[in-house]
Image (tube, rainbow, N blue to C red; front, top):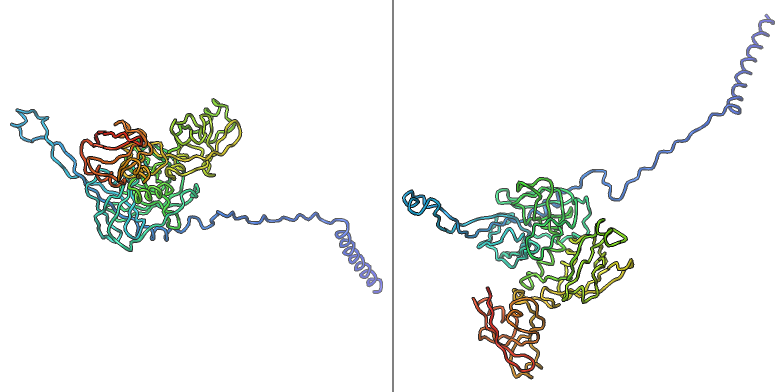
Length: 477
């Protein structure tokens, strides 16, 4: 028995020793390699929206109230066949006669002031005799045409109403590619429409404005815009106006992928000019330009494919007077980078004659800033009033000293003359216009009112500073 207990005791000791040995071995001789895996910290960029598209409901519901429908009508001579077989036998079945026919067109517009100023496209109201504006609440008003600017396809209307819903001006310069925008319109048969898209390009020129000095620097979006939406609003997610919808890229006349809007940086300046002066005060730099591309950079040995190349300057232009030379590359205007001709047009289009701008150019591989005073189409720096562009001159009230010297009581001085009716008639600078069609003139408004009542020829009487009197005649046609 004792022998058996001794055996059991020996076995237990052996087992216990084995366990202790294994423990010691694993702790000190067979320590496993430990690999620590650290999960990367989640990064969320400032512009990243994990919820997807932004909430556009506020911008949509707010903006539709300020977008109106515009209906225009105008008379057009329409040719018709007589429809009488006996008449056609004697005069031929292709005999036609003219009969006036009323044509109608429709578009959209945007209310920009509580007292009834409405902005739309020029092509929406062009040639119209009557303009009717229908608000979002279905009230109707006859609209007065304040002015148009075919060069930007903008028109300004006025309706007699108060406390109207409006859209405030946004900042089209700070629009980013990929930013969400809404196209809001008010077609005749749909009351109001809202479509969403993103900004896909800026400063686009597509060659659709057929005027002598077009300004095309469109915002391109993929928001659906159809013909009845022309003149409607392009708004950002805050409900601010950033553009006026004007065109679609299509072979069928309907939306097919992307559309174009006039940026408010241009619209706002045009509207202010039309309200204040009756026409747009167009500032000109006086340069012939080309967008710098790889081919042009190689041809003229330019360091960078950037900026706008000055191919030439006009003799009486602002650029030449300021010191810009052919061969310069314009890279910025007032610290805003310009890389295309359309970007340069947009920046200059924000200004009026007489404004001084800083033009940054690259010349002989170094940067240079040149101050340039912009000029009007007549070559002067003054404001062109109303339709005096056709006269081709800057006029100002004759001062008391010159009137006393010449013994006259009234008169308008020709301070600057360029291409136009006055120069063609033989009038020179400093001539004092005393009478127009035998009526005394003392202000530009006097001259304007006389021209409005005139048809055919215009007789101008006046005197030069040396006392020489002169008479000139020209036609308005």
